[in-house]
Image (cartoon, rainbow over the protein chains, first blue to last red):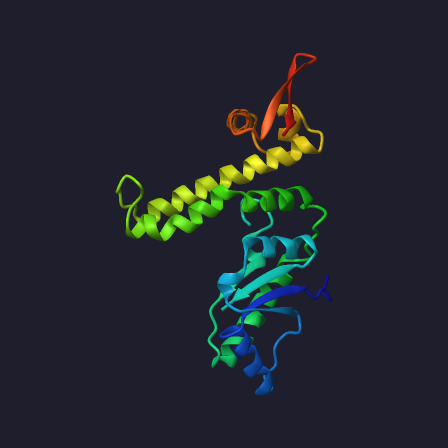
Length: 66
Length: 158
């Protein structure tokens, strides 16, 4: 379990967190590589069903960020 | 997440503006650590719970209630009564739990647990609550009473 790397699905708002993530990349900031990004046009677009589907397909965590 | 036993620590919500790269890295680091501490998630072990949650979230009732929140708190309900946010929140919580439990029972019946006792063993919900919810589910045509088998009432999903 020591080498366990969680798979996290991140729903990022195009205008806020996604741009923040982009800026983090451009500024060469380090952050964990565990997130798999799904860009949405608004975090309000995220339906509870998306989150359940992510878990159903075996991801370990979900982050919704806007 | 908490009611289903999957755990609230697996789902995170955070506000990050486009100018806050530092905040974003901080959020991602914290979320990763928190999920790492939870360990691996096994969707097979939670198949019934996930299925039930999916049905509960797809039905109209919860969606109506979530959608109506602002207007009921700010303008009042159809009787003109203004609800305070806390009262609405707790009503929403209990409806959420009830709807989820109903869907869990429905899934258990579909999978062949047709008596109250078998449903309870499959889902972990206590017998009294199952009987109460089954009566409700019969009224809304989610399940039907099929008859007696060895003096035990048996239900079927509709």
